[in-house]
Image (tube, rainbow, N blue to C red; front, top):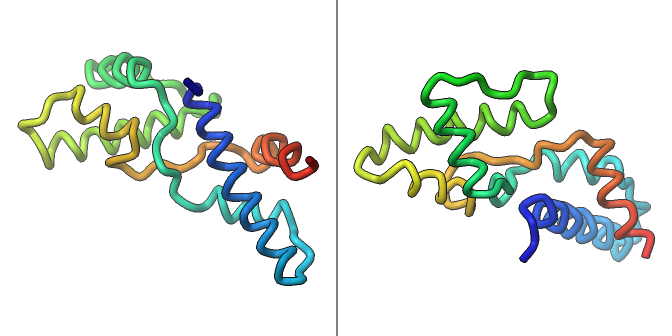
Length: 131
C-alpha cells in the first residue's frame, strides 16, 4: 500500500504529465513550470494524510495544543484541515470525530490542495517526464 506522500506525488505527476502531453499533442511547447503552478492552484483529491496521524494531530489541536508554526511547510495543511474539521463538526454534529477525520483523509470533505512549493513539485514531476 502506498503512503499518503506517495499517493500525493502520483496524483501530482499524473495531472502534470497529462497537461504536458496534451500540450505536445496540440503542437504547443509545454512549459513545465507553468503547468506545475496551474496544478498546484487546483484542489487536490484529499489531504494525503494518514488517518491515525491526522486523528492525533487534530485531536491535540482541538484540546488547545499548538499546531506546527508557519516555519514548517506543513503548517498550512494542518490549519486548513483543522478549519475543515471544525466546519464538518458544526454541520454534522451527530457524526463522530473519527468519521470526520476519515472523510477528510479520503477526500470526501474539505478543501485540500497539494501543499507543495513549485520547486518541490518540479523535483517530483520532472523525473517522470524525462522517462
